[in-house]
Length: 477
Image (cartoon, rainbow, N blue to C red; front, side):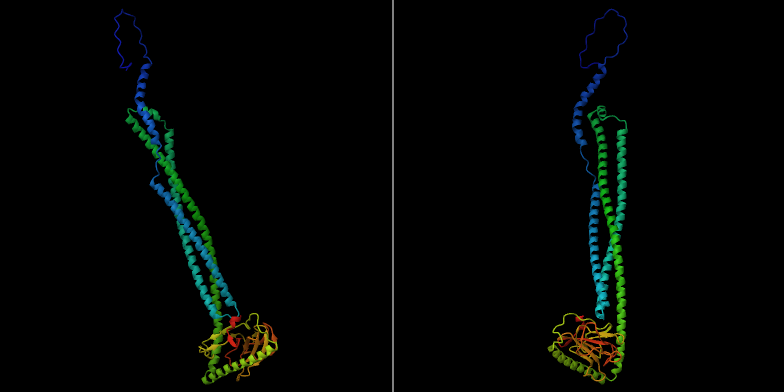
């Protein structure tokens, strides 16, 4: 094309005389510029519209995909769940520590009961049974703690696997995005303006632009996915770190609890063995007494009569002692009150406790078919017997009201209302060492264990009288 097709054509010049032939001249520069200017004029209207639309299309943020949003939400929920479980485990450890402290106190009480002079076997058995129950509770709590630790270890393994998977996904997406960015900037391609200007129509330009926007959207989605993957991975990493720290702490605490529990089981075993030893010795002493009583019981009538004599003799001596104490108080030899506690007069096996008993040679009293008004302590013959507290000796020697054989007794008045009785003392080579009217101090030897009177074996019959009635000596120890 040359010139403007719409311009008028110039008229032909008249023929001239022949002229010399001239060489052809180059085309004027305006011939190539005019078509380009024409294309610009055609493109400018829709290019202007495209400039308005492009920022709107390019600026639309692509929302994150639902899958990645769900991954992040799941990771956060898992983190909260593990945090709650760890808090519950800490509370469980605190509960176990409290149980261990209570168990330690129970062990101390049991050892005190076992180590006490003349241990009450009934009390010791009850304490050991209670100790076993508490140990069972601690064991149950400990097993729960071990199970929780195993669950946390399993959870930690799953979390570490999830962490590795998320790290791989993130690395893959980063590699893809990096490759696409390198391809975009390293490839020598036509600029966007050149691409638009070279389009044959507005529709072609929009199609080309759509392709470019699609590639941009994909890159933007990938970048947002990477951002979400980083958030998810950070949450998983934090959960893994917290869980690992807590499992390590829980493992140390569990091992500590196991050591404590093992120690308590050893103590429990030892307590059971000591109880068994006490029970065996008590049974042995009681068997001796039963054997001797069986010999006496062959003549039931004589045995019954002897029991009645013994009770009558004791009551007669009790009345006599009351009269002596009344006179001694008037003389100021016996205090009106006793301030203090009593101690055991002798160390030995308790073959009979105070109160209702199954021992058939004891007399009836109240609702009890057989009643024991003191505590029997069995030990090797001639074991020293000591005063249970400070006081005045009001009687020392054989009971004058007893038929043969007479029991040798020491009675100490600690006050006008409180007296202690020590019966079946030896009257031979290790006879009574005090006399009536003598003041004695707590722990002073007053005699030795024997088997005088109607006794089935060597032992001390220890009684406490308060306001004229015999009461349980353990109340004063």
